[in-house]
Image (cartoon, rainbow, N blue to C red; front, side, top):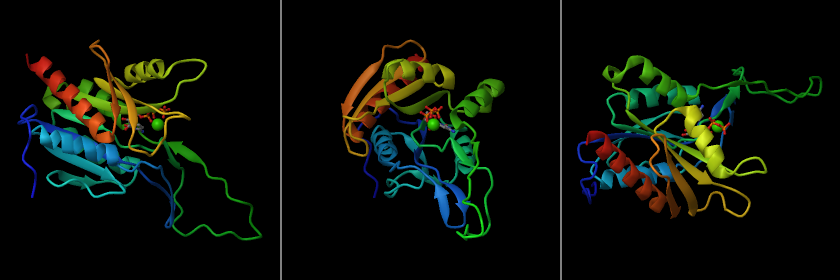
Length: 239
Ligand code: CTP
Ligand code: CA
């Protein structure tokens, strides 16, 4: 049974959320993947449902099951996720890209398992670039105009570390501009900030100049802050 919404901030809204991480196959038994668990995406879906939204959830290799009450689709590779996300974003009010998408995939897929044999040199894996799902969708949306129905509010996620050159937020602001999305949730990662735990420090950046929102805590707390920011942005647009 699905829990009833606890607020109506997103009543009548359709929110597409991608979660987890893609896998790029090398041969029938091996892949290039990443450690994304899907937990942040699950927390976002629960927060969106609690705010009264309908949720289209696109899952890529999550450690946990998708939450009850979502309209679920699945994808394995970045190319499959691209198709599924574009489909889900059509007619949606919001797209939140929390999935970790492999930037590259093996240039060729070998239909038979790669063997180690003494008479052959060690293999070299050549990679090619995957499509940038967010950037492509935003370019398509601009080309089609509002009649195309691609989500008018697109939220990206980025894990960043600062370095000698730029701060985390400078990198985040540059990525927001490069991607062209309306909001970017910048997760500060680094040596003394533990990766894979349930504690996060995020800053939500807005393309329209709205002042940045800071949030810290569990993935549930971060999700609540992101969904609040989405509700405010939708309200501002309507008003
Ligand atoms: N993303 C995407 N398609 C890709 C890669 C990333 O849609 N091929 C999305 C992610 O889901 C995320 C956002 O873009 O919402 C930022 O991802 P990130 O990996 O931080 O950005 P990149 O542009 O890939 O830059 P980087 O070189 O820092 O990895
Ligand atoms: Ca990337």
